[in-house]
Image (cartoon, rainbow, N blue to C red; front, side, top):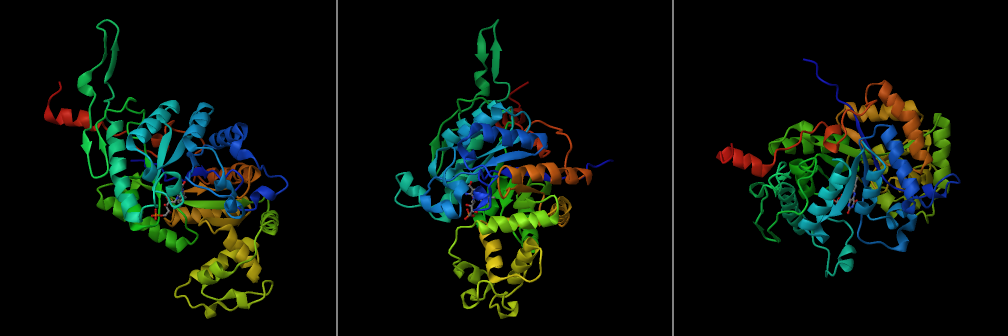
Length: 455
Ligand SMILES: Cc1cc2nc3c(=O)[nH]c(=O)nc-3n(C[C@H](O)[C@H](O)[C@H](O)COP(=O)(O)O)c2cc1C
């Protein structure tokens, strides 16, 4: 029997001014894309032309002006549900991921909003479930403090269960709309969920019919045990920030092994690390752009965090002198070496200075792998991570916009397609379809069938 070849899944993680903190300062960069519907629509259409799996919007519930030097793209932006509704209207195939925070919402609200967007997009929605990293959100939502990890994930577990039941509260064929008989709906196929739990009491049914995908796929990202467990149990894809191949392989294996323990197949959950591809037509062009970006960083070169990361107090060395011998590192393992290797590759040379290592660290401090090179070199790296089961695909974070994205789409995607690693046409038009995930049965219909209460 012919089995279809495993292929990469690619999505865009939107940073409207680019992932690199200084991306917006390049002469050619757009600076106001976050609030420009034309810009956002163009990005989505371009992704769809390239046959991307999804367009992903993150979210946070607090901000401050001092984020500008490290996280300008996340400091101010549009609310994701509103924005995705607009993007859904100008696209037809690409999957759309919204982030919604369970800690500061209600299951009925999220069930309605996601089901509505699944209709508006024709079954292209997925929900990135987050419990919130930013403790300042509590002050914006009338809470005394941000809950700890275990309380947030207890709440999220119950929250998600309710949302999933609400999505099923209308069976697929509940709406009869029979003009002759005057029966609009078959009441026996509309269900209260009567949830009474530790944190919520929700009667249901939802006031939106069952979404086109039946169950909207969930995604999540996280590092804690509870977050990994949520991903292994419920998510169709797990996002992660990994800059080291070996650690990503461990993460990949851990999630897949846990998924099997929860009775799932390893093909039901996809591992998608972030990737920041700095693409040039030639390697020289890419390295020059990398240097240009770093020259635009606004920083006081505080070496504290980097010193801790590599186990050597770098403040004792001149910023423009060569790196000290890594055998001086007080850390066990090879993480210091691996980080330096990545920085050397990004610079395109063996001997790098303390300043140059700092640049790589600053550019990746939010946790995603930055690679610099020509299209073949970028594709090689992606293929390696894919083949070695460190990734099933990538959450692409262009370092600057829109040219950083366009170069990836125009030059790297064709290489991946030529190698048979990425689709050349869409074979489906729903989020589930892009990932080969089947549409689940409705739990109430299944129960009725099992109990033999229906013909
Ligand atoms: C690729 C990626 C995207 C994320 N997007 C968001 C987001 O949009 N909003 C948010 O509050 N947290 C986001 N996070 C943070 C995670 O949801 C998670 O809270 C964090 O990694 C800490 O892990 P923990 O929740 O297990 O403690 C993201 C993390 C990753 C790796």
